[in-house]
Image 1: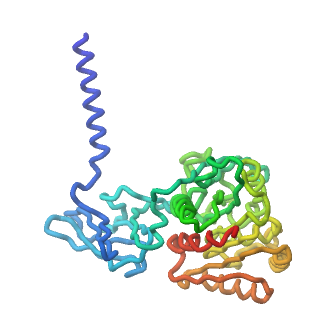
Image 2: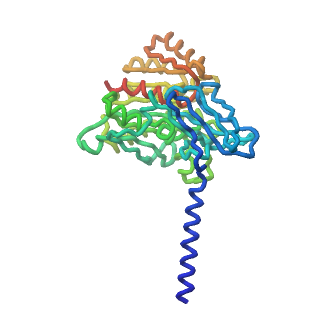
Image 3: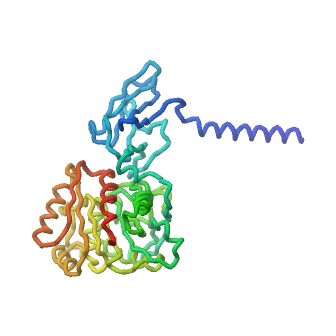
Length: 392
C-alpha cells in the first residue's frame, strides 16, 4: 500500500512538472521579436514555416502601420520598420488572414475588446512610460456607492509617492476620464498614468496630485470581468452598452464621485485644486460636467473630445443651453481651459467648430494641435503637456 501511494505521488509530481513545462513552452525559442534597433527602427520576426503571407499591423505612422514580412529559409518571417518616434506602440501579426499576438512577446495591452502586443521606442516621451528608479505612487481599485446611478461602482485612484509618508499633507486632484469602449483601467494600462506621474513628480515638473479615473459607462459597475455580471459582460464601445451613452446621467451624478474622494482621501477640497480632463467620449463628458457644475474645477482639458453634437439630445437637462452654461462657467472663473486635437483626427472639424463657438462667446481657452489621429499616442502626450500646467 505504501509503495502504491509513493507511486501515485510521483505521478502527480511528474504531471505537475509537465503542466508547468507546458505553461512556458509557448515561447518561440531563439526568435527575437520585437527588436528595437539603435536607429529606432524595429524588427519583427515570427516562425511560421507553413504560412503563405505574413503582415504586421501596428499603430505607428510610417506606412500607416503596415509591414509585409519576408520569409527566410528557416521558416522565420522578418520585417524592419523605418525609424519610429519615441512612443509606446501596439501591433498584431496577420498570418494568412488570421490576426494574432506576437508569440515571442509576452507583453500585451487590451484596448476595448482587442488585445495587442506592445513595445517602446525610447529617447523621448516613451521614457516617461517606463518604470524608473524613483519613488512610486500607488494605484488602488476603489468602490464607491452611487445613489443616482443605483449601484456600487469602481474607480482607479493614483496617490503620489509622498501620500503615505506625509500624513498631514493634503493634495490636489485630477479627475481623468476615458473614452468610448474604455473603463476605469484604461488610463492606468494604456495611458501609463502611474508611471507618467511618478516620473514627472520625481523631476519636479508637476505638483504631486491624486488622479481619479472613474468608469464612464453609467450603466456598468466596473471594467468587463470585474462586475457582478462577471464574464458575461464583454468589452464593447459605450454606444453599444444600453443605458450608458450620452443620456446625461453620468454628468449629472459626477459630484457623487467628488464628494466620495473628498471624504475618503486627503484632498484640498476646493475649485482651485481640482482639474478635470478626458479623451474622446471622456472629453465630451468633461465639457458637460464642467458646464453643469461650474463651481468645481479651475482646470479643464479636452483631449480629442467627442464634440460631434449631431446625435446629442439637447432636450436632456444635462445637454441643454450649452452657451448659457459656458457663460456661467466663464463668470465663475477658471484658470485653464485646454483643447487638444490631432490634425488627422476624425473629430478634428468638430473640435475646430467648437473653438469657433468659444471664440464667438468670448470664452478664453488654449488650443493645442498635434499630428496624427484618434489614438493613445496623442492622449499620453497630451497628459504630459497638460499635467505640468495644473495647480501652479
